[in-house]
Image (cartoon, rainbow, N blue to C red):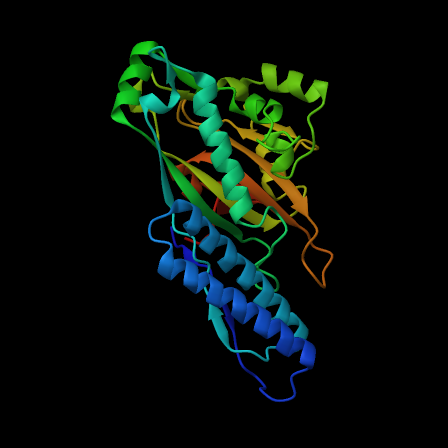
Length: 314
């Protein structure tokens, strides 16, 4: 698969006559970049600081693209999104109680990671791709790779543990310190009673990772995915084509029963953000838990084959 590396290049076409407002904006952006560099120099290996570097790099990319549109290419800066992939280790001690794996503990760790991913990419409020995104491009940023330790895998197999029903969990679990449910926080709306009932009975909800068969477990990642919104060609229309799929429009929850066995399921939340300036187009920003190799799988978009991710940002 031919991947493109996503970044912004803003070229200098005229360096004279910049308006005072432009100078102020450039100073603010420069300050953000310096702050980001300071974090990189002094943060060491702290994951919290790495997340902050990522957030600041996306913020500066978004700010620079805004300046570019308003000043007709008067600046000459290259700004790359700096978001290294994190390894999220889940060990037996993290999720067990009295020697037994607790399903809610596992889901809590992964649910919190989806919230963390959403926060560090701007919680749906930032757009680093203004004026740069082709209609058919889908941008992906891998926030973290889920790594189950050997002690967990051995116990999960012995216990016949299966990771299923995560879609229902994110619709009924509140984000710590807020009154919002996870799917609501990630850009959807609060699920109705009818939505929750659909989640309970959906065939897709019964798919997941079956640890009784270790060979059936694939590597999963938490991914931020962005595309231009379309009812037919975006992820909404794609998910509806699956008999084992589920789309709850208002709640934003998307479940796709991917091919390849019980362990293959894509679960995420998609929220429409009207943030493309100077345009009527909208972005569809998504946070997914997805098998890693699914990112390169093709899907049908308007009669054409396209990768789930066409541009990898990290």
